[in-house]
Image 1: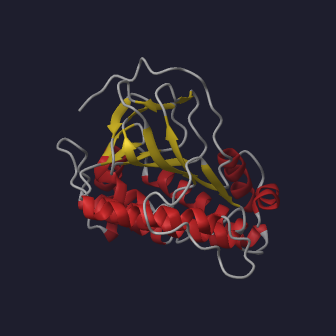
Image 2 (image 1 turned 120 degrees about the horizontal axis):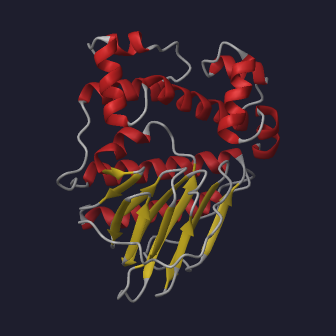
Length: 306
Protein backbone atom coordinates (compact mmCIF):
# COMPACT_ATOMS: atom_id res chain seq x y z
CA UNK A 1 0.00 0.00 0.00
CA UNK A 2 1.45 3.42 -0.94
CA UNK A 3 2.11 5.68 2.02
CA UNK A 4 3.09 9.31 2.27
CA UNK A 5 6.27 9.89 4.22
CA UNK A 6 6.78 13.45 3.05
CA UNK A 7 5.77 14.71 6.48
CA UNK A 8 8.47 12.82 8.32
CA UNK A 9 10.72 15.00 10.51
CA UNK A 10 13.98 16.02 8.91
CA UNK A 11 16.93 15.64 11.32
CA UNK A 12 19.92 14.18 9.48
CA UNK A 13 21.95 11.33 10.96
CA UNK A 14 25.31 9.95 9.82
CA UNK A 15 25.56 6.28 8.88
CA UNK A 16 28.36 3.93 10.05
CA UNK A 17 31.42 3.59 7.76
CA UNK A 18 30.81 1.15 4.89
CA UNK A 19 33.58 -1.28 5.83
CA UNK A 20 32.07 -2.14 9.20
CA UNK A 21 29.26 -4.46 10.27
CA UNK A 22 27.24 -2.64 12.91
CA UNK A 23 24.27 -4.29 14.63
CA UNK A 24 21.90 -2.94 17.25
CA UNK A 25 18.45 -3.12 18.77
CA UNK A 26 16.34 -0.02 19.51
CA UNK A 27 12.91 0.61 20.99
CA UNK A 28 11.92 4.13 20.01
CA UNK A 29 9.00 6.33 21.01
CA UNK A 30 6.87 8.75 18.92
CA UNK A 31 9.02 11.55 17.52
CA UNK A 32 11.99 9.34 16.67
CA UNK A 33 13.15 9.83 13.08
CA UNK A 34 16.26 9.57 10.93
CA UNK A 35 16.85 11.37 7.63
CA UNK A 36 19.88 10.91 5.39
CA UNK A 37 19.62 13.18 2.31
CA UNK A 38 22.58 11.41 0.67
CA UNK A 39 21.62 7.93 1.82
CA UNK A 40 24.19 5.61 3.38
CA UNK A 41 27.41 4.11 2.04
CA UNK A 42 26.22 0.63 2.99
CA UNK A 43 22.94 -1.27 3.14
CA UNK A 44 20.64 -1.00 6.16
CA UNK A 45 18.62 -4.07 7.21
CA UNK A 46 15.72 -3.44 9.62
CA UNK A 47 13.69 -6.21 11.31
CA UNK A 48 10.69 -4.88 13.24
CA UNK A 49 9.76 -6.81 16.39
CA UNK A 50 6.93 -4.59 17.66
CA UNK A 51 5.19 -1.31 16.92
CA UNK A 52 5.09 0.36 13.54
CA UNK A 53 7.25 2.59 11.36
CA UNK A 54 7.24 4.55 8.11
CA UNK A 55 10.25 4.15 5.85
CA UNK A 56 11.07 5.84 2.56
CA UNK A 57 13.93 5.73 0.10
CA UNK A 58 13.98 7.92 -2.97
CA UNK A 59 10.41 7.86 -4.29
CA UNK A 60 9.61 4.45 -2.75
CA UNK A 61 7.90 4.16 0.62
CA UNK A 62 6.55 1.45 2.90
CA UNK A 63 5.18 0.70 6.35
CA UNK A 64 6.72 -1.86 8.69
CA UNK A 65 5.16 -3.83 11.52
CA UNK A 66 6.15 -6.81 13.63
CA UNK A 67 7.75 -9.50 11.49
CA UNK A 68 8.63 -7.28 8.52
CA UNK A 69 12.14 -7.01 7.07
CA UNK A 70 12.95 -3.77 5.24
CA UNK A 71 16.23 -3.24 3.40
CA UNK A 72 17.50 0.20 2.34
CA UNK A 73 20.20 -0.05 -0.29
CA UNK A 74 23.18 2.35 -0.43
CA UNK A 75 23.45 5.66 -2.20
CA UNK A 76 19.79 6.77 -2.18
CA UNK A 77 18.28 9.38 0.15
CA UNK A 78 16.27 7.70 2.87
CA UNK A 79 14.27 8.47 5.99
CA UNK A 80 12.42 6.47 8.60
CA UNK A 81 10.40 7.22 11.71
CA UNK A 82 7.92 5.86 14.21
CA UNK A 83 4.58 5.84 12.41
CA UNK A 84 2.26 8.63 13.59
CA UNK A 85 -0.23 7.16 16.03
CA UNK A 86 2.01 4.21 16.97
CA UNK A 87 3.03 3.87 20.62
CA UNK A 88 6.58 2.83 19.75
CA UNK A 89 8.81 1.04 17.24
CA UNK A 90 11.08 -1.81 18.37
CA UNK A 91 13.53 -3.12 15.78
CA UNK A 92 16.85 -4.78 15.08
CA UNK A 93 19.11 -3.08 12.54
CA UNK A 94 22.34 -3.88 10.71
CA UNK A 95 24.53 -1.60 8.60
CA UNK A 96 26.89 -3.52 6.29
CA UNK A 97 28.01 -4.17 2.73
CA UNK A 98 25.44 -6.66 1.45
CA UNK A 99 26.76 -9.81 -0.17
CA UNK A 100 26.01 -9.94 -3.93
CA UNK A 101 24.33 -13.33 -3.57
CA UNK A 102 21.54 -11.76 -1.48
CA UNK A 103 20.33 -9.67 -4.41
CA UNK A 104 18.45 -12.53 -6.03
CA UNK A 105 16.65 -13.40 -2.80
CA UNK A 106 15.54 -9.81 -2.22
CA UNK A 107 14.64 -8.98 -5.82
CA UNK A 108 10.98 -10.14 -5.66
CA UNK A 109 10.40 -7.72 -2.78
CA UNK A 110 11.78 -4.61 -4.50
CA UNK A 111 9.61 -1.49 -4.28
CA UNK A 112 11.98 0.73 -6.27
CA UNK A 113 14.96 2.97 -5.50
CA UNK A 114 16.77 0.08 -3.77
CA UNK A 115 14.03 -0.30 -1.16
CA UNK A 116 12.94 -3.87 -0.34
CA UNK A 117 10.07 -4.86 1.93
CA UNK A 118 9.82 -8.54 2.88
CA UNK A 119 6.38 -8.98 4.43
CA UNK A 120 3.91 -11.78 5.09
CA UNK A 121 6.48 -13.79 7.05
CA UNK A 122 4.73 -16.53 9.09
CA UNK A 123 4.82 -16.01 12.86
CA UNK A 124 6.51 -19.39 13.28
CA UNK A 125 9.60 -17.87 11.65
CA UNK A 126 9.69 -14.70 13.80
CA UNK A 127 11.35 -16.21 16.87
CA UNK A 128 13.92 -18.02 14.75
CA UNK A 129 14.87 -14.69 13.14
CA UNK A 130 14.98 -13.00 16.54
CA UNK A 131 17.34 -15.64 17.89
CA UNK A 132 19.64 -15.13 14.90
CA UNK A 133 19.82 -11.39 15.62
CA UNK A 134 20.66 -12.05 19.27
CA UNK A 135 23.42 -14.41 18.17
CA UNK A 136 24.64 -11.78 15.69
CA UNK A 137 24.91 -9.14 18.42
CA UNK A 138 27.05 -11.49 20.51
CA UNK A 139 29.26 -12.55 17.60
CA UNK A 140 29.89 -8.93 16.62
CA UNK A 141 31.60 -8.45 20.00
CA UNK A 142 34.02 -11.35 19.53
CA UNK A 143 37.69 -10.37 19.64
CA UNK A 144 38.84 -13.57 17.95
CA UNK A 145 40.37 -14.91 21.16
CA UNK A 146 38.78 -17.81 23.00
CA UNK A 147 35.16 -18.71 22.34
CA UNK A 148 32.65 -16.14 21.07
CA UNK A 149 30.57 -14.62 23.88
CA UNK A 150 27.22 -16.27 24.59
CA UNK A 151 24.11 -14.68 23.13
CA UNK A 152 21.76 -12.97 25.55
CA UNK A 153 19.41 -15.93 25.83
CA UNK A 154 16.73 -17.39 23.62
CA UNK A 155 13.72 -15.51 24.98
CA UNK A 156 12.69 -12.48 22.91
CA UNK A 157 13.16 -9.96 25.74
CA UNK A 158 16.36 -11.13 27.45
CA UNK A 159 18.38 -8.33 25.83
CA UNK A 160 18.42 -4.62 26.61
CA UNK A 161 17.19 -2.02 24.16
CA UNK A 162 19.78 0.40 22.86
CA UNK A 163 22.58 -2.18 22.56
CA UNK A 164 24.95 -1.63 19.64
CA UNK A 165 27.98 -3.69 18.60
CA UNK A 166 30.57 -3.09 15.88
CA UNK A 167 32.19 -6.19 14.39
CA UNK A 168 35.74 -4.94 13.96
CA UNK A 169 37.72 -8.15 13.55
CA UNK A 170 37.60 -10.24 10.40
CA UNK A 171 36.17 -13.29 12.19
CA UNK A 172 33.51 -11.25 13.98
CA UNK A 173 32.46 -9.55 10.75
CA UNK A 174 32.19 -12.82 8.85
CA UNK A 175 30.19 -14.46 11.64
CA UNK A 176 27.82 -11.49 11.75
CA UNK A 177 27.41 -11.51 7.96
CA UNK A 178 26.71 -15.25 7.98
CA UNK A 179 23.98 -14.66 10.56
CA UNK A 180 22.51 -11.84 8.50
CA UNK A 181 22.60 -14.07 5.43
CA UNK A 182 20.49 -16.62 7.28
CA UNK A 183 18.00 -13.86 8.18
CA UNK A 184 17.69 -12.83 4.54
CA UNK A 185 17.28 -16.44 3.42
CA UNK A 186 14.77 -17.32 6.16
CA UNK A 187 12.55 -14.31 5.56
CA UNK A 188 12.59 -14.27 1.78
CA UNK A 189 12.02 -18.03 1.56
CA UNK A 190 9.08 -17.95 3.97
CA UNK A 191 7.44 -14.67 2.93
CA UNK A 192 4.67 -14.11 0.48
CA UNK A 193 5.46 -11.34 -2.01
CA UNK A 194 2.88 -8.58 -2.26
CA UNK A 195 0.92 -8.29 -5.55
CA UNK A 196 2.48 -5.89 -8.00
CA UNK A 197 6.05 -6.41 -6.84
CA UNK A 198 8.69 -6.98 -9.47
CA UNK A 199 8.97 -10.24 -11.36
CA UNK A 200 12.42 -10.88 -12.79
CA UNK A 201 12.97 -13.21 -15.73
CA UNK A 202 14.47 -16.48 -14.46
CA UNK A 203 17.26 -16.19 -17.04
CA UNK A 204 18.28 -12.80 -15.67
CA UNK A 205 18.21 -14.23 -12.15
CA UNK A 206 20.52 -17.00 -13.33
CA UNK A 207 22.97 -14.51 -14.87
CA UNK A 208 22.92 -12.45 -11.69
CA UNK A 209 23.69 -15.59 -9.68
CA UNK A 210 26.59 -16.47 -12.01
CA UNK A 211 28.14 -13.03 -11.43
CA UNK A 212 27.66 -13.25 -7.66
CA UNK A 213 29.10 -16.77 -7.45
CA UNK A 214 32.38 -15.91 -9.20
CA UNK A 215 32.84 -12.18 -9.90
CA UNK A 216 36.51 -12.72 -10.79
CA UNK A 217 35.68 -15.00 -13.73
CA UNK A 218 36.18 -13.59 -17.27
CA UNK A 219 32.48 -12.85 -17.76
CA UNK A 220 31.36 -10.94 -20.84
CA UNK A 221 27.95 -10.02 -22.17
CA UNK A 222 28.35 -12.79 -24.72
CA UNK A 223 29.39 -15.46 -22.20
CA UNK A 224 26.61 -14.58 -19.75
CA UNK A 225 24.06 -14.50 -22.56
CA UNK A 226 25.18 -17.91 -23.80
CA UNK A 227 24.93 -19.34 -20.27
CA UNK A 228 21.25 -18.40 -20.08
CA UNK A 229 20.42 -19.20 -23.74
CA UNK A 230 19.81 -15.64 -24.93
CA UNK A 231 21.36 -13.60 -27.72
CA UNK A 232 23.81 -10.95 -26.42
CA UNK A 233 21.60 -8.06 -27.51
CA UNK A 234 18.44 -9.54 -25.99
CA UNK A 235 20.27 -10.44 -22.81
CA UNK A 236 21.78 -6.96 -22.39
CA UNK A 237 18.39 -5.34 -22.99
CA UNK A 238 16.54 -7.59 -20.53
CA UNK A 239 19.23 -7.29 -17.86
CA UNK A 240 19.30 -3.48 -18.02
CA UNK A 241 15.52 -3.21 -18.18
CA UNK A 242 14.83 -5.49 -15.23
CA UNK A 243 17.77 -4.72 -12.93
CA UNK A 244 18.29 -1.05 -13.71
CA UNK A 245 21.94 -1.37 -14.72
CA UNK A 246 23.94 -2.98 -17.50
CA UNK A 247 25.49 -6.45 -17.06
CA UNK A 248 28.99 -5.00 -17.09
CA UNK A 249 28.15 -2.38 -14.47
CA UNK A 250 26.69 -5.09 -12.24
CA UNK A 251 29.83 -7.16 -12.79
CA UNK A 252 32.06 -4.22 -11.87
CA UNK A 253 30.14 -3.65 -8.63
CA UNK A 254 30.43 -7.35 -7.72
CA UNK A 255 34.16 -7.37 -8.48
CA UNK A 256 34.84 -4.30 -6.35
CA UNK A 257 32.93 -5.78 -3.41
CA UNK A 258 34.86 -9.06 -3.80
CA UNK A 259 38.11 -7.09 -3.83
CA UNK A 260 37.12 -5.24 -0.65
CA UNK A 261 36.51 -8.55 1.12
CA UNK A 262 39.92 -9.88 -0.01
CA UNK A 263 41.65 -6.74 1.22
CA UNK A 264 39.97 -7.09 4.61
CA UNK A 265 40.33 -10.83 5.09
CA UNK A 266 43.65 -11.75 3.42
CA UNK A 267 47.22 -10.58 3.14
CA UNK A 268 47.34 -10.89 -0.64
CA UNK A 269 49.26 -8.11 -2.40
CA UNK A 270 47.02 -5.51 -4.01
CA UNK A 271 48.05 -6.69 -7.48
CA UNK A 272 46.90 -10.24 -6.70
CA UNK A 273 43.66 -8.95 -5.19
CA UNK A 274 43.05 -7.10 -8.45
CA UNK A 275 43.70 -10.21 -10.54
CA UNK A 276 41.60 -12.46 -8.28
CA UNK A 277 38.72 -10.00 -8.59
CA UNK A 278 38.80 -10.00 -12.40
CA UNK A 279 40.83 -6.86 -13.11
CA UNK A 280 43.51 -7.32 -15.75
CA UNK A 281 44.97 -3.85 -15.13
CA UNK A 282 46.13 -2.78 -11.63
CA UNK A 283 45.76 0.85 -12.76
CA UNK A 284 42.13 0.28 -13.75
CA UNK A 285 41.52 -1.55 -10.47
CA UNK A 286 42.99 1.27 -8.37
CA UNK A 287 40.97 3.90 -10.21
CA UNK A 288 37.69 1.97 -10.01
CA UNK A 289 38.23 1.07 -6.34
CA UNK A 290 38.93 4.68 -5.40
CA UNK A 291 35.79 5.81 -7.22
CA UNK A 292 33.65 3.25 -5.34
CA UNK A 293 35.16 3.41 -1.84
CA UNK A 294 36.72 6.87 -1.83
CA UNK A 295 40.20 5.62 -0.99
CA UNK A 296 42.99 3.56 -2.65
CA UNK A 297 43.01 -0.21 -1.98
CA UNK A 298 46.06 -0.08 0.29
CA UNK A 299 44.60 2.66 2.46
CA UNK A 300 41.27 0.81 2.60
CA UNK A 301 43.04 -2.33 3.83
CA UNK A 302 44.91 -0.41 6.54
CA UNK A 303 41.67 1.00 7.85
CA UNK A 304 39.57 -2.16 7.71
CA UNK A 305 41.82 -5.07 8.63
CA UNK A 306 40.92 -6.70 11.93
